[in-house]
Amino acid sequence: MAEDAILGFLQSNDEIADSHEFAASVGVGHTELENVIKSLKGFEIVDSKEITKDRWVLTDEGKSYAANGSPEVQFFLAIPPEGISRADLKVKLGAEIFEIGSKAAAKNKWVGFDKDLVTKKVGSVKDETKDLLKRIDGGEAVADKVINDLKRRKLITKYTWRGYSLRKGPKYVLKRKKAATDLTREHLQRGDWKDLEFKEYNLDAQVQPIQIGYMHPLLEVREAIQNIFLQMGFEEMPTNNFVESSFWNFDALFQPQQHPARDSHDTFFLKVPATTRQLPEDYVDKVKRVHEFGGYGSKGYGYDWKRDEAEKNLLRTHTTAVSTRMLYKLAQQQLFSPKRYYSIDRVFRNEAVDRTHLAEFHQIEGLICDRGLTLGDLLGVLEDFFSRLGMSKLRFKPAYNPYTEPSMEIFSYHDGLKKWVEVGNSGMFRPEMLLPMGLPEDVNVIAWGLSLERPTMILYGIDNIRDLFGPKVDFEIIKRSPMCRLGL
Ligand code: FB9
Image (cartoon, rainbow, N blue to C red; front, top):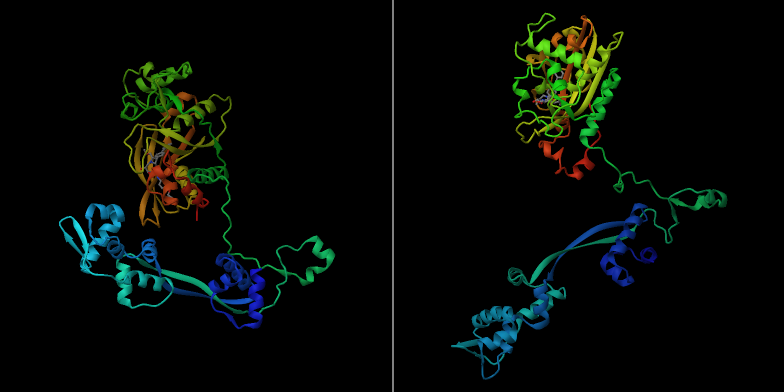
């Protein structure tokens, strides 16, 4: 109906100058007319120009004065010939009109105040404010001085009127062909496809956000890094045990029982169950001996190793505890076979928390177990692994881990941050860790680790770890987070 009205009017008129007036004349809402205009413009059936007009409209207060008179006139007209007390006049007018009206009426010298009595001082008054408001409401132009005064009193406000002027477009028709969105079997059968107008594809149309699941950034990066390990021939270790014994988390890695990391200030120990139920006894004896007396070329630590210390349960402080279990299991095989293992899972450390650190994080760990591996192999696999993460320039710095020798911190130059960034730690597991397991003497293990949170926060530009992990994560961030694109 609106469309026919527009096309019909333009057949015999050059222009529809004001879409608001036209909408009113055909009895439709301007929004409905606006939608029809946009559609007709999209098919070039009409040309439309957006027009804006600023005009003054009355505020709610202004409308009330235009209807009931200005406060000062209401104040004047409410005074009887014999006068009236302030209190009675306030009740009659209401506090707001009384307060505003009394000031303006006194300023205009229309009224007098004798103690509590209010009396008229003139016979009649003219309500100029009301007249001006009614003229503005009718669209009449008034002097700027008047506008400024009424605007200051918040009786009028500026309204920007948006509308359209319309003319025939290059593809004007009196009656638009039905716009089809799909070519159907019926169209082909009937043959009326020849007369159909097909809607243009609007490739810029904003699609409705679809309510689907969204991958958390950590899971995006985890999946990408898992794929890197899998492409490099690594298999995943079973890390589905957050609770570990101190034996597998520390002792089996040749980490001495006095090591500060084993203190409750750095480690979460369990109260229930406080101790592990079973350990591989013959292996425990070998671990005990290597700590106390050494062996395999090592002099050990020379302290009394305590089993009850090894039996304490804790939340694993690193996934290397799982790596140790896997290597021990590998060592029990009759025939040694080389392995490449990886894991990405949560570890827990009782350390101070801040914007980038929580008491837990996801550790990424890779290890290769084979005969004759050297530090060169470690450097090579690190170059390969990190280059797939998009980090080609690596530098290595000697470091210390209780269970690896040599050990190296890994640094990469980050072009975005324009600085060298520590991207992980690495090393070769010590013989005191590997030989008590029963691995052949010529077998070495090269390994490295990094966190999942650090790369994720850098890749997604998140500077507070609480925006990434924990109860305060904003799901909108997750919905908006792009796919993870490593290595670019
Ligand atoms: O992840 C770390 N940094 C990092 C990694 C990637 C990255 O990518 C960006 C896109 C460019 C950016 C930064 N780090 C290791 C280094 C530092 O962040 C460090 O301050 C914090 N470290 C954690 C532990 O700190 C309590 C990160 C975590 C870490 C450290 C060491 C290991 C694992 C995780 C390990 C190991 C290891 C060593 C030898 C044998 C087996 C495992």
